[in-house]
Length: 186
Image (cartoon, rainbow, N blue to C red):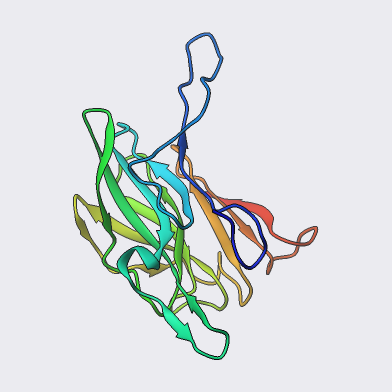
């Protein structure tokens, strides 16, 4: 399916196998999670059995209508899926999703106890910010904004937490070369 706004194809989740000889198998769609809307990006737990990924609020039948434009506008939500017998199943929306703001770009920590994401939810520094939330199985803490040392009045997005707890993210509000430059913080 292609977007009505820019005629670009919708995002989907794919999987491939990294072989011991350094080759990668052909990518195949993750049919059990892909919807008719945008799906992805994703982050997978260290044991490979839990996936956090972004998809659209249309999946929950949550959107706003603009009668003047004859259009429906959704938000990006985060979902959690489990791998059972090699298949991704049991996909559930996270409890802090809201039709009032976007929640996207997940990155789970090595120990699986902290989920980083970007959002324009209230309480941020402005624009889209980097947030984190504690994870304990299917229970989540209260999302915490990473504050002004990371976030600006502009946009910070695409967080990635390494196994060594180094956070990489993009920002168009910090001095750089322009656009969404990549930054890191320990």
